[in-house]
Each structure stands twice: as structure tokens, then as C-alpha cells.
Image 1 (cartoon, rainbow, N blue to C red):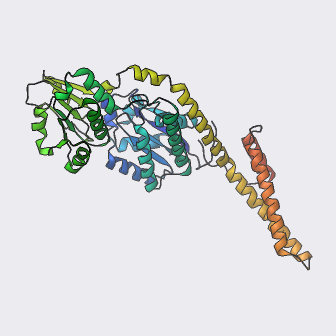
Image 2 (cartoon, helix red, strand yellow):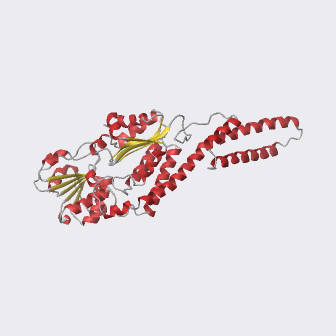
Image 3 (tube, rainbow, N blue to C red):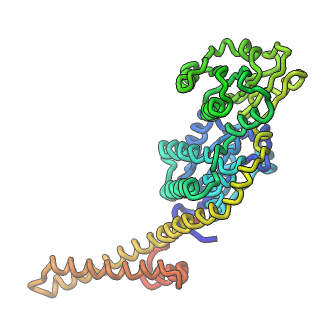
Length: 421
């Protein structure tokens, strides 16, 4: 494992749960709403964590950060969610160092998404980075890493066809409706929840169903009105939820609540009702399936949908991976520079000490000692020497670790090794 020097005794970790091993219920236990994220960041800061970002989406909840031991980060997650350490041990993953870096690149580039090519996570990463910066938890390593991931994501979007067409849970839900419901243009559609997924679903509904009977409801009516205004849709009060559910043929639930917001008590109609639950934790109670006229589909079911478009995207994976490797190599190069920067700084300070001592000696010996010229010449020599060492350390033909050890021994530098990745 390469050692990168950023903070005493700490390593970079990526840990969390995703759709790959944890089902919707387990992911719901570890889901973080905005207040919980803020509480986690505050706790991390008070615990002395020096760099951390946290994301929580319908597909995954993850922490990327520095710690002496991963349990410090696991504890943060479990203490701010309903999840337990035992559940984490059973369903979660932990990556360290280069594996953690590679994992974040795959996540941010849509290669690890529940629906291949879904880039919605990159918006979450940007938002998480801003939040961490506000809490003083965005160190240079994480900031540079996230920026590199964003760069990879942009290149993959423009240079490959891995995101051709819509590739998100919101699109998959509309695709499912189109494939399942006859005469969808004539059906009453109710969208409950107008957050990020709700807004995207609404846009896909309007675009692909050509349906003008779409009704929006949100706990905060103003947010629903802002979405409806773009598409000339109907908005109803939250108080009318039960009434509107009983008028609907299709109900899409995309709220951010931590507990179910729809259960069978709200459904009085006997006509067929398709419910799509796009929420984590699940926002539609399982008891709705007690009703013979109700069919409930969760986003985990939607992710299983495959089509020709998805197969075409899979063929773009090697190209996307090569782009990731290019940008990851640039990031690792930057890390290598940071790796020897403390030693070069210490060397420069040591040489400055030699210079000052020698100038003092010459000042006493020479009557017409030219202070200004001596400073200029000696500083230029010091700069040439440190540049020479820096170029040597960047040379792949030599072992950086061995060269650093030799420089420290020869110049009797104090140990500048601090951080591990």
C-alpha cells in the first residue's frame, strides 16, 4: 500500500452499503436525511476527523474519509441512522487506499449505478462536498479527488454512449409504466413527492406518456407548484392525498420520508391501482399488497429492466474505464507530488539554515560584505538544489520512498512522514 502523507496515522477509506448486497429495507435502515447528514458531519468534526464526505441516495449510503481505523467511520454512520453494527458487518463493504479511490471513480462515473450510466450520483457528490466544506471537513485530498471524479464523469458523458437515452430510476419507472399499462395517455397519474427523483420522473412522464392528467402533491405545496408550472400540470393540497389516490390509476411515490407515507387505509377504491415506490426508505407500506386491486413495484424491481439500450451501454464500459484510468493516473501523480512536498520543504529550510550560518561567518570576516548580492546568489543556489531533488523524486526510474529516506538521512531531516492512503 502506498503511503501518502496528509495526517498522522490516518488512512483513506470508502465504506457503506449499496443495492448490490443490501435490499431496500436494509438500505432504509442506513438512509440519511438532511438533518442526519448534518448531525453526522458535526459529530465527525467534534471527533477530530480531518476529511470526510457522506452521500445517501436510493441506491447507496457511503462515507469517504480519513480515520485511523474504519470503525470510527462505521460508528458515525450507525449512530446517525437506524442501522446497527451487526447489519453493517453483514451487508456493507469497506475499501482502503487505492481501492477506495477506485471505488469513488466508479460510483461517480455511473459504472456502479443500479441502472448503468445513471449519473445522478455526481450531483449528490457535489452537494456533499459543499456540505463538508461548510463544516471544515474538506481537506485538499478529498477536494482534489472529487474534482477528478467530476472530470471523469464529464468526459465519460461526452466521449462515450454509456448514458445514451435516459438512464435513471425515474426513467425506468416511466419505461415500466409504458410497458405495463395500456392506453397510458388516458390514465390518471398521481405523483406524490417532488424532490430530485420526483422532478425527474415528472419530466419523463410528460415527455414519454403524452398524458395531460398528471397531478402533483407535495407536503410543501410551493415546491410542487414550481414543478407543475414548467409543464402546466395540476397541483393538489397534501390534505387531498387520500382523495387523489382513489382517483388515480397510477401512483408514483417519491417522498423523502423516513417512514411509510402510503398504506392500505388510504386506498378505498376498488379499481386497479399501480403503485411505484421510488423511495429509500420505502414510503409505501407492504400492507397495500393485501388489496387485490393494487400492484406495488419498488425501485429495486425497476433496476432489473433490461433492453437494447442498456446492452448497448454495456459495450461502452471498457472505454469509460480507460478514461477513469487516465484521470486517476493524474490524481495519483498529484498525490506523489504531495508525498514528497514535506521533505522538499524541510530540505529547503535546512539549506536556509546552512545559508544563514555561512552568511553570519562571512559577514564577520569581510569588511565590504555585500549582503544583498549574497542573499540573491545563495537563494538561487538553494532553489536550484531543491528543484533538482524534486525532479529526481518525480522520476519513475527511482523509488520515491528510498530516495526520501536517503535525503532525510543525508540532511538529518526530522521525520516528515504523516499520512497514509
